[in-house]
Length: 419
Ligand SMILES: CC(=O)N[C@H]1[C@@H](OP(=O)(O)OP(=O)(O)OC[C@H]2O[C@@H](n3ccc(=O)[nH]c3=O)[C@H](O)[C@@H]2O)O[C@H](CO)[C@@H](O)[C@@H]1O
Ligand SMILES: C=C(OP(=O)(O)O)C(=O)O
Image 1 (cartoon, protein in one colour):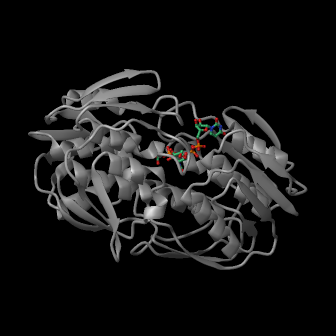
Image 2 (cartoon, protein in one colour; image 1 turned 45 degrees about the vertical axis):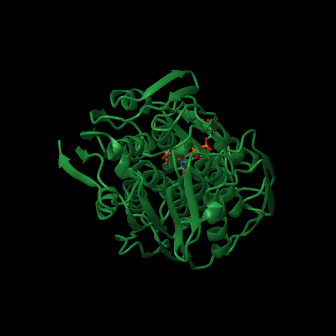
Image 3 (cartoon, helix red, strand yellow; image 1 turned 60 degrees about the vertical axis):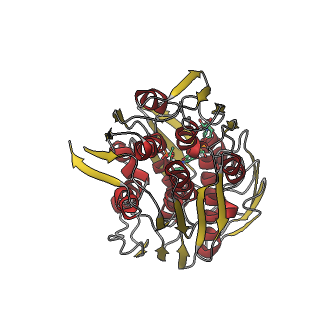
């Protein structure tokens, strides 16, 4: 496994291209299995999870080849019913998203419980509840869900008890292949949901209301060939906006969109980051002293849980005390002890962290635990005095494209070394 070595305190400025969103690419790749035709995708991020999803498609008979400059074209005609292997399921939460398309295509799918970032218990009851509402029967044994709908799925009303992103993806894909109309209430509203809906419309379903609380879907069994460009990665973009502010540099993130930042934009501005649109994307720089701001994570358009760790790294250097509440996942504070190794002053109790800004962080050996936690350590390393070694960068590679290349081109001294 590789480690990253960062020499902190270098000037950091320039421009970088934001990647396509991993969390949009994964459901869209899964949804590509619904049809039987030709799929053309562009702006696919070159990250580990996308490679794992392509491998999963390959095991189901869909030979995609490797993306070239983020573009890929493949036929889903040869899809076959296959069990998703534990080895891929354990790596990535989004592997569970192949369940609905396989069920639509074959009337049955067997799949094990998914892994992904260890940030909470992450049950899949809402995904399964959505499928049951559309008429599926579910058995569980030996760690495997056996889901059957031999007569096909029927449109129905799905009222989600919470606005789960993954369950909304599952419900959308299942509804797209169900007979009749489905109404999804309390749907997640993330830009990645809107992107999946656009892809499903391209495939031949009729999805309306994505991005709002209520989505309606007219299912189809007559699928089209489809071309689709993946939406930009708002979490990657916001992470680098934070990097610009922490280092005192100025950065243009090409392709980033203000409307995708939701509440994060206001919070980052209150913290002292100046963010404004350019012709090509967004520009960010520090506007003065960094200021502590309290924040609570929420589903979109609230402050994203996927940015909580990076925001905490920023707050480590702000004037004052920031109270950070994690409201989406039960245990998403694994970066706290690692930031503490670098001199951060953080008290942590349950789902709340209290961060008192310190004058400076210092380089240390730290362990990357989950995807966004790993990014918070890289951000801290960019400004820390001395050298930071981030061990176990496997998680970063799951979701951040060419991280050291992007940072190095903006002036960071960062190097990847095999452990
Ligand atoms: C691949 C992908 O897109 N991952 C994102 C997705 O994860 P994911 O789709 O797993 O996140 P959810 O929105 O589903 O999870 C939100 C909350 O709902 C709970 N829950 C979820 C499903 C379920 O069946 N039962 C249940 O109780 C979860 O434990 C969590 O507490 O959205 C999260 C919230 O924005 C992000 O942090 C992840 O980066
Ligand atoms: C939590 C994340 O990924 P996953 O849902 O795949 O674990 C993430 O992208 O931050």
